[in-house]
Length: 359
Image (spheres, rainbow, N blue to C red):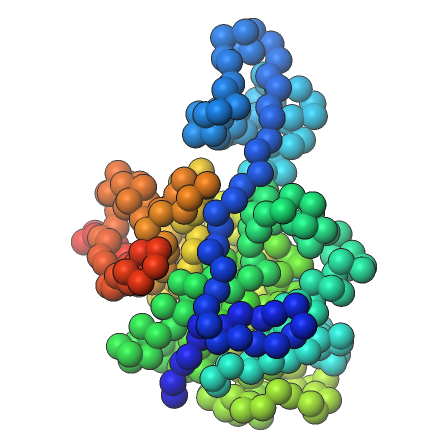
C-alpha cells in the first residue's frame, strides 16, 4: 500500500493534497493574579511568557497539594489547565449514530470524516459540553491550554511517521499499541491494519474522541474480518449492532483526559496496562507537559517497548521542540533517544524513537 498524505480539508468539503497549515504556533495569553504574601514578592511580566508559564506551573502543582497562595478564581482556572479526568469512551451499540451528520472522505487508502462538517455541527450544537469549536474560534487559536489541545486537526508530522512505517515496514503484528494524543487516530488505524493485537486511542478532549477518532476507526475497519480487511470506499451500509464487537473494532479502546490521569487510569487496570509500542505526533509543543509525558512513557511502556515520536524541531509561539524535549529525556536518564529521520523541507521536522536503557 502507498500513502500520499499531504492533504487538507477545505471549508467546502473538498480535499486538497498540497500540504497542511503550520501547526501549534499560537497560544493565547492568560493573566494571573496572585494573593497573599508571595504576591508581593513576584512580579509577572506580560512580555515574558516563559517566566509566566513557569510560575503558573509552580502554583498549579502547589495548589493541588495545599490549595494556598491563589485566589478562588485562579484556583479553578489552574485546575482546569492541569487536570482533566481520564475516562474511557465506549463504542455506541448503534454504530449508525456514530456516522450521523458525517461526510466520509478518502485520500490514498485511508478514510476519514470531513472535519469542516464536524466543526459546523459542533458550532451549532454543543454535543459534549466542551464547546471547543466556538472557544477555538473566539481565541483565534488551535491551542487553548487545558481546554483544547488541537485534536480536531491532522498535523503534518503525522504523515511523516506514516510514511516511515511504510518505507521501513515497521511491524505491529501481535503488539499492544497506544496512539497518544491521537486526534484523527490515523497512526492507530495503520497499526490496526498491520495486525496489532490491540490499539488504545487517547486524546485530551472527549469531543475529539467521539466526533473524530471513533468515526474514523469505524469507517476504516471492516468488522467482517478479524485481521485486516479494510473498506476501500466510504461506507454507505448500515452496520448491525452485533457487528460492533467483531473484527478490528474489538481490538480498540478509546480514552480522553490529561496524561497524568490517563497514566493512573491505566496503572489501576487489572492487570495494569503496558504498551509494546507508543505512537505520538506533534505532542511536545509545550514544555510544561514534558514531565507528565515522561512519566507516562516511564510507567506505561513495556520493558522492551518502543516509542515513535514525530515533531517539528521548534514550535514558535509555544516554545517546545526537539531540543528541549531531548534535554528533558536525558535529564530523566531512563530512556535512549535516537533520531530516525530528519525532514528539512520547510520547517525542519524530525522522527525520534525512545526505548528504556538497560535495566
